[in-house]
Length: 313
Ligand code: CP
Image (tube, rainbow, N blue to C red; front, top):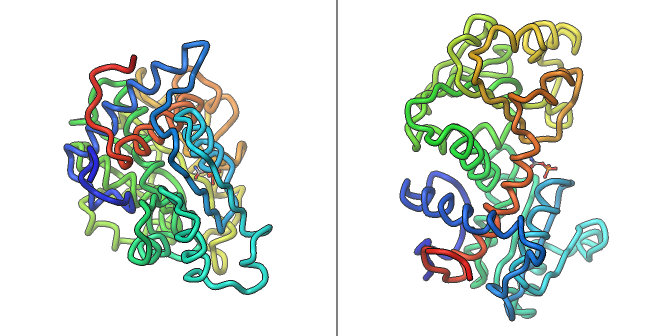
């Protein structure tokens, strides 16, 4: 058992509010290391971390890789394109291979929802979900919550808008959970085909007119259109989508002065967000990437048995 009192980190819903706060508090200590000339600590020396990515990733993979290296872990980086999966090896056989290699922590991204849950039931190693299908992306949600807390001090009482392709977004599902658990009001906005009414069951508001809700929002998480996951045409055209739902400089002017603009990446500049907004002082998109490393270091540390930190020597 660890500071988190669990073997795996598979979704936000199975975490308690105290565990979410513990991860964020621990991430602060690890972020302090980033300003030092030597950024590594021997926290995971002798432990093996395996990155098992069945789907493309830039940010998440590099962030986990850097987090593991900064904690001095031994790293195995398996990309499905170069593994025996392309020769037809089943997930369970890959699991048994990893078990035999005594990987301590496996970080998995998979196109099928709940694949990391399947892995966790069949292996003694800790499993971290790095994104599964439409279902969950808990470490992204934790870094989003951490980044917003860092900027605003607290999430409780904030009104957060999540804008775009909610239907196909695992980030949206995990963000809704973490923001609600930390006491925020959440409003989803996008075309009705991409923001179905069923989402109301998660205790969120739904809006279809971005201009109407903008002045009330304290923070905005912009999402990209996930063309690769969409079946059929979910809206008339990118041009029309941009007109109705893109965060433009004009729309930024309608927001509160201290609004916080976030994006989990990858961004489609000129589609859901204009350059001038993505690069504006209101945006914390680069901080989200930096904080992702600190949050993932904290998760590794806590899953490996780390206790709450008072400070790192
Ligand atoms: N935010 C995110 O999951 O990005 P990648 O797909 O590049 O990992």
